[in-house]
Image 1: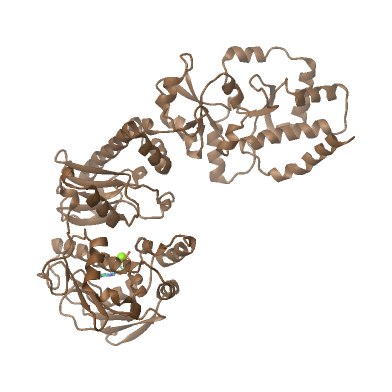
Image 2: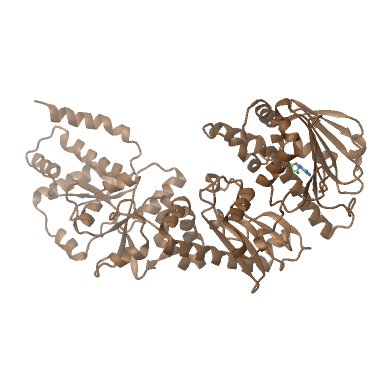
Length: 623
Ligand code: ADP
Ligand code: MG
């Protein structure tokens, strides 16, 4: 390659702008948890060793093939130097520039934003590894860093990368006979603790105990880390402490997991898996920004850092490790994706996760409520995206309802306590829980003691269609015009008094095509009006989702129902009869309509009502 011959000399390069900004913060801020830099460097060394292990399976053209896959740490307390070396894949001249000088993905910028957003969090620095910029954490403790690396590719030479965390870094040709990377850190005066082998040992035990390659300190021939493939051990032999330590090192999550799921099977496919349900939702999972997926191993060799095909997407909040000897080691990573073994593993793992959740829901309702609060949205997503899991997912759904304050209920609880003649699962949707509580749609149901579920999230609107009917109960939005038994409807459509009929005519005239129809209501009690969905309209919940997605702020065309017994409606009838044309009738009609829109969360511009309200107040206060 011609590029190599061009770089025989020392060269000075400038860091990318975002990297400079990040370095500036890392060099100058005082973080109490500085020791995580070691975890990050060991994690990089371990990644390089994993990749080397994978190369060794398929590639015979490698430098120093006999070198042990290991990490060596050397401390020099007098000189204040800490060195970390690995026999991993190493880096070429160009890879050093690409990996340690620029950031192709926007990791640095994202992490800077994270640091700003999390100012109340005492240690936002802890998350650095998740943004793909963990290496730079070394500048919290380093006066100067020298990375000496030689690629495993036999015809590449070794290079030094040297930086003190300021604007620039320097590349110089280096002498290094064996493959891999060595990082020499000249420690800052206030960071000399990291040249103490006991302190290093302690940090490794805490953060890197499960790194599967031996980590040696100085001339000790015993590795300091325990290197266990915990997932291969029988469940009964794993203590909670061990499992939690493993989880912490895997995920960097400070909180212990809500549950762990251990899977050992031999048929139809051999699997050792250790999976966890975190206690808290990582918010970035909702937007899919953060990388997710299980670590995939075969014969204890890691072949993929994040595999997204081992579980359905709706279970992407699950963390863990999967190891199967049935996955051939010599397949390419691309082929792993489509391998039929992966499909088999996926179906076993999915079944286990759903079984764990089902058991938790039945036997540990409090834990399940915690789960539901954090991850309920993902279960709902699964209901709408994965029909093959519907039967197992539907019983996992929870809702708030008009009976019971903050208690979550399942569909089966709803159905069980419904009276014998009830054949529907009633639900209400709205802008917020408080708005729904006040909704005119609920009056009838409260009066008749019929339970109504609160659909609090827009995605809930998709559930009825996805589920179909549940134990022969069909879902029914309480905002439909035909929501009550047909006998009551007939009664309501009996001939009206003339006064009411003229009012209805007037309302139609005033509102024009803003409404599909105007009718007397047979379900309202204390509210003067409501907006109901006509028969030919899709569920208004779907209408809500469409509006969210299209940012459509116009109001949907619905049926305005008036309560003939309400004083406002009766006053309007009387004013019409007396032909009091001072503008109040029309202003009141418009206001009633917009009040109803507001209650539905469909009002495009509430502030615009103020002028009219004040005009009405003026009339009301006149003496
Ligand atoms: P990440 O590990 O998330 O990619 P880092 O900032 O920790 O981000 O490391 C940046 C990149 O530098 C790594 O992806 C890797 O390509 C390279 N790198 C760092 N340390 C080593 C090492 N010891 N051996 C080989 N490559 C390394
Ligand atoms: Mg890293």
